[in-house]
Length: 250
Image (cartoon, rainbow, N blue to C red; front, side):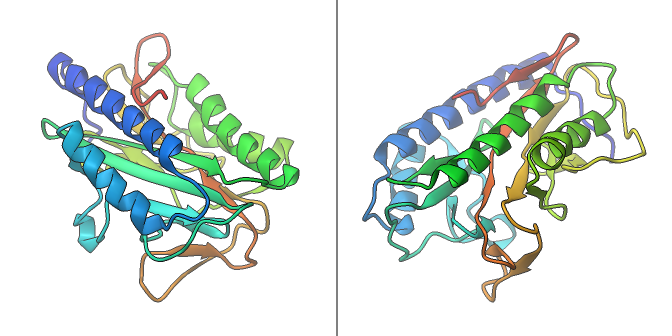
């Protein structure tokens, strides 16, 4: 399937979808605290979806049972909110998507709970740096592989952490996951040329350790095999003639 070019009206709607999602993630960041369960965060997210009159992208998607993915410490992605009580020193990745007027936006942030070790903070900042570094390479006329090249150069080349190579970003629009899939590592093949009007969800996903992963029995939660911390940062962006517009800017 070809990568879709969004119409001016679709872009207008996706800008609003992104703005609402960024607002929701900011609200969640302000709400979260030590002693809460991740289920409480999901319930709060449900109230925010109603407040801002959007639908959740994730709930029911291939059977996923929740609004948020709430991945803590060695949990990498796709963790179902539940009875886990957030503790001092945890890192929490909140991944969320919304549907507004039939168009999706998707973003993730990583939050510190209390006294997070400095080396873990540094790791989280590096993954966010990789996201922004990759976005800075995007504009009409460049090839898709500039994204993965930038992510791997920063996470592995500059800082010695590990990209989780099995997990990717993606196109986004009327469907949550559209073409193209966007890897977070260097590829020899340049991939398709980016064009103005494409919308992409760029999401570096990395681990402090080896980057090897295991999927748990719930068939959703992915954790690091060595139990080292992992995190994810994600923005939905619009390709323009001169660069990239971040639609989910916090």
